[in-house]
Image 1 (cartoon, protein in one colour):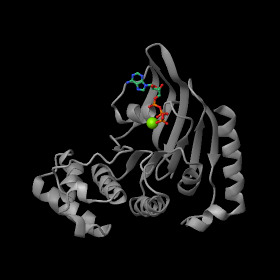
Image 2 (cartoon, protein in one colour):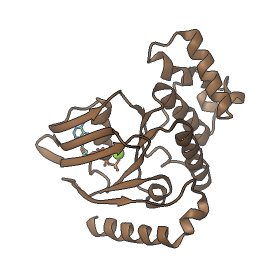
Image 3 (cartoon, protein in one colour):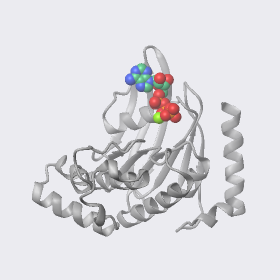
Image 4 (cartoon, protein in one colour):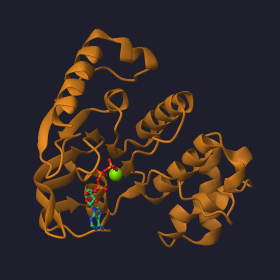
Length: 242
Ligand SMILES: Nc1ncnc2c1ncn2[C@@H]1O[C@H](COP(=O)(O)OP(=O)(O)OP(=O)(O)O)[C@@H](O)[C@H]1O
Ligand SMILES: [Mg+2]
């Protein structure tokens, strides 16, 4: 903790004269897990795209030290490449040699218990497995700062839970900083140190919530009275702005 990994000040974005969000200021400390929740269309993906450098802000500033790893909602694995080759992409994008990339990618698959799938092609992987592969590829690109856009939205509840635990394990292993977008209030509380709540478009930050509760967190954590109180207040807030 301490020095910030990301600082956004007074960020605004307009598409075709329509303001999507205006004057957003937020930060992520080193090693922090921060989520953004907010109604559909309020600009969450646009914020991540601006941080990743894929989209240009209309006004404001974004400070990061290095391009983050970016994981999209769909795993976007290349169908003609195996699991190992897809994971390697995170490294070859960083100009790491083929031989070294193969070794590092394999070590990573082994460490996170996926090495038996190294030679599988994406269409033979389950949805959860494909997301794990995509996550490892993202982490090999940059394990210090991850942007994640509803990465588990399409998964069934059980797979989702095991992915959430897997992500927390990975986050703790690398002491990464994470900016995580989700529609799921429970998911945001389970994973985060802090949550930003956005209003509908033109969006502003209407609330910042500290989830000052112990780690490591398990599923039972969600039955804690304090957690339920936070969940209810966030739900009320989100319902009031739909
Ligand atoms: N390239 C673009 N050109 C024009 N308008 C765009 C573009 N990208 C996004 N928008 C508009 O900006 C707004 C915010 O989109 P964005 O995808 O960031 O929302 P979101 O909060 O991620 O929504 P969801 O929760 O549904 O994923 C939407 O009204 C969308 O139509
Ligand atoms: Mg989106």
